[in-house]
Length: 267
Image (cartoon, rainbow, N blue to C red; front, side, top):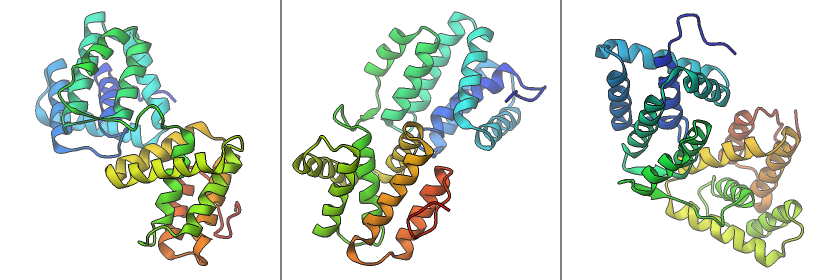
């Protein structure tokens, strides 16, 4: 989709900055917003109200349209609109925005690498990320889509505020085995154990968003429907579906653009 007629290169910069600051964890901290505004003001001779209006315009485009498509469009537009030096400065701006809240998320690193590769600046991004002053939050190389599935199973299993029962864990392993039948039950219990560790040790909101987005990108709509059926089965492992579990599954279905009925089938 094309940008509005009065769209500028600075708007595209704002889209890229917002994709990093907000799009990676669905949060925009005061410090991230401050650094973002400063980065834009440094590019253009604009007063604070004008910068604020520009950010609102860019954020509206970003949230009301397909976010990833808007990010890709902005990256392509900036590749031709910016000089080599300006593209390098943009990478540095993104690092500063990512570092602003003191934590550099794995998803933020991925977005910076994606943009850097598109602009042939991979070496610069790797050097800046390697020397970051922020705490780097990683789940490790052993974390894959099967772990994302297990993480969502655990999220639903805990939705009612109760500890996971042995029966619920058994159901999780059974469902995971449908996805990776080549793995043994023991290996899949290790996957659940690993996901439980991440669930217990790391802030959940950003991780939930990451898992939802990762699975949306990786799975077809049919497979996303299968995951929702898995979650329904996990929720009912102890005999009944609570309102909290129902609401969580419904919100996931909405995020994945899938219609479901609470009998576990598509609507």
